[in-house]
Length: 303
Image 1: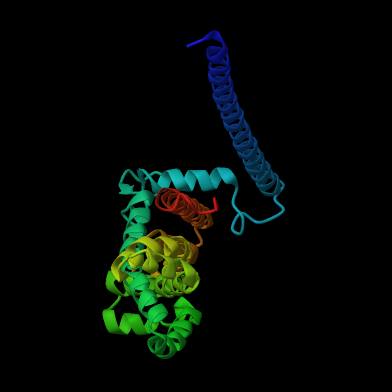
Image 2 (image 1 turned 30 degrees about the vertical axis):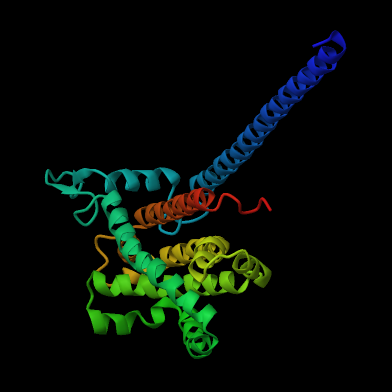
């Protein structure tokens, strides 16, 4: 190979190496920018939380609101710690009791999560199945959709009584209530996802030789999955807001039942502690579903 041919070749290799190096540097800059943006967002949220707690403390310290209606942050923290530990049944009494209502606060939370897991879990199983059937067969959708919308519009307290009559005051009625709260959003999201698929994509797969089953598994399901996961997010949030209604009767152990019972006993610090735990648990559940969405549908938002 002559010098005249090796020179352009080495220049091309050097240019490719420089291009790759530049791409790596750009990727590193992009990663640093994302981290800095995330850090700024976290700092803003922490600062907002500190300001909120500070204002809460100032209002209660100035006695602008009676402690019965708004206890101090310290008393709420004390109620949270007491609910997670063994403590005397009353000041000066040596007898110890476990948490609240003979359960620790985290045990109340686990009991509620188990009920939601069963109720929403069955909704995740049956909701997409009915959604695919309704989206694929218009006559079935015409018959079933009004009843589905009727169920979706009903507030949970509207049918908790009849569920207790049917299934008793145990966990079965609570799980049915959570199932009925989560089932319509998942089904409607599935219907929306299937009907939103462009017909050209299905026809293209069929024209390339794909069978009906392959078209369903490789085109319809991946295209519908983002909508289904969005429906699951909505359903979990709705079911979590329904947990207090589900645990109004015989809801111990249960974080919603404890919040309701402590409110009726005027234990405001414990009620607010339960509300905070319910809110944090809801945020963590939503973050978990969002993380699952990134794993199952990484292509979403990148088209």
